[in-house]
Length: 186
Image 1 (tube, one colour):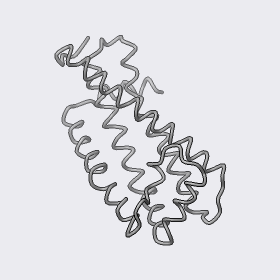
Image 2 (cartoon, one colour; image 1 turned 120 degrees about the vertical axis):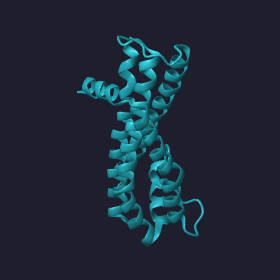
Image 3 (cartoon, one colour; image 1 turned 90 degrees about the horizontal axis):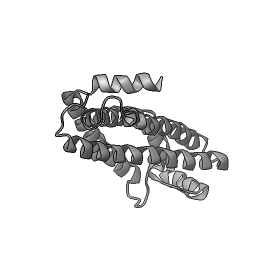
């Protein structure tokens, strides 16, 4: 299955599509998500989304859920069920296709490195699991299931690990593609 996804990324890595996904990713990360965060903060400073917190303890997580207030919790839950479902799909395809495009120009077709173009799939998968846990935590408040908070912290760390590796792969692909003068490698 993963091999099939990898091959599809190589088939779909058209420059125009990557550019559109780049614009969409920029819209989400540069405009929409900061706007959502500002709306969550309202007049309270220091309030941030749970999915941006790395290695948060249950106490910190439940403190943030409490700080969101009566308006913020349902608003944030709505964001997690809409915007934060679409955005991971956008960055999955943007990073996956970009890595594929760069690796196609940076590594021979039989190179084992070419299989790493699916790394953004891990970030997407753990982001969706993280979103599910966030929705549950927001929905059951004022209950504070500590196990779910620890699971959220773990899922967030794994998501960011996959995202970081994806960024590193983009850098490696760019260096190798430059080295090969952006010529498709056979």
